[in-house]
Image (tube, rainbow, N blue to C red; front, side):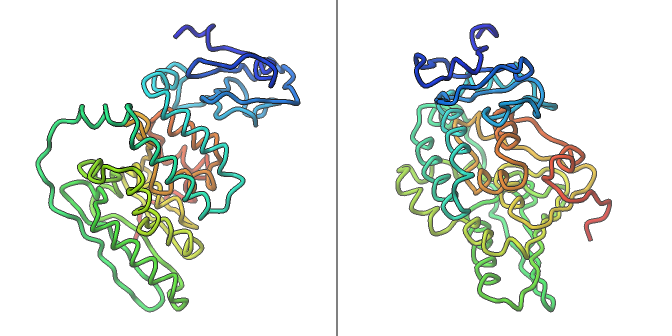
Length: 317
């Protein structure tokens, strides 16, 4: 797609203009053009280039900054335009919702994409893989601290259904027990978590049923209730649903070699483990959108600069 074709001025999105039919729109924020009072945002990502502090920057869905590039983001949007449109539509909505309402909206948006051609094509393209042993959540209480350890070494702590159910139960226990003053979430081994177990994608074929299941089993539902007591300690890879859950924590510490990524767009879906809610509350909707639309890894240093982590430490003990 030609850069000039997708470049637009703010006036192009006045409510009286013709519908924008391209899968992405780009605005040069540094031009300082006036934004119309009657604004109709397009049903696709509106990408800003230039200064995040420019007048009107709050209107765009994201502003390009390292490690992302405009060409890279546009290419990923072109590959999955329906998913990209749903993602930014959800992120625009979330600031007006409380966390539980946000989780409901996220699950409904996720269900929409579960039945999409883009996601079905991604699933069809995946080669068969050998089964991996199920994971374990080690739960240990010492006085007023509940320690939660993700342990699935063959999959770098990718979270499967048994681990997900155990996370829900452990956090529910803490939510009901005020004598638990702190929860510590960590991962065994070299990685915090590679995210959801991809082998489980599509095991529930009906999107409405999948939404109903998430509405009563998603660990994020309990994470929101214990967030002020929750601490996450991150080393190595912190990806997808692992990052989404960790981002609910009141405090996140990471090692210098930790890195963070949301790869869901290339799968034709969105972060559906609560991340659209948790990350927007940590780093804002624009940087959340940038992580999703770019799919880029961000370093521990960038995560600290953005507010995704609170401290970088050499020792997580």
